Length: 192
Image (tube, rainbow, N blue to C red; front, side, top):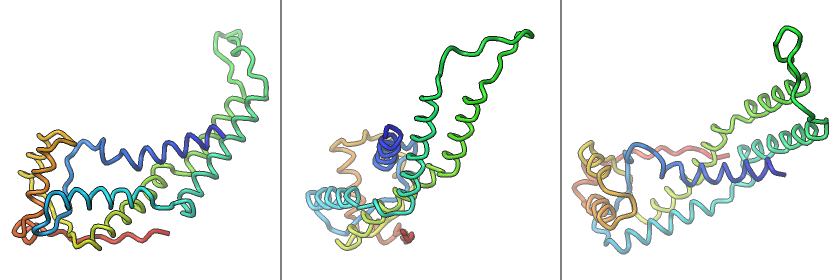
């Protein structure tokens, strides 16, 4: 139970926050020629919420993480009922003896974690959320565009969430010339 809550919390945190903690400013953005700033912000919020509301419960990636979580629960619960007394005493030669049960538990946890490959599974879930967001923006007439190095550098100097940053992004995103010159191709990633 504890491990499942950990996996669920970790998955949601990674999916939601991974873009916010990235060291590099975004290389692409979305725009719509002539869109007003209020509509631009409203569409961004609406589509972001749609992405976060994506039902991922039936995804293979999520089922893999849940399965791994249950396996970890079982391993750790079995370990907890196996004693867990004082740490082993040094042997006559001064070396610590390895507790075979602890070693077995560590190996099982490692195998389960490696088998689940949580980074890859989290990436799959994030892709599903992003695909929903991208589809929402596309349905509203937005196109993806590449930011130039100069635009990324300026964006990097603007604090996230500030009106100045929003205004700068909107100025780029609503400019028909920018969108025509810097239009990006959108990769469609299938989601199981």
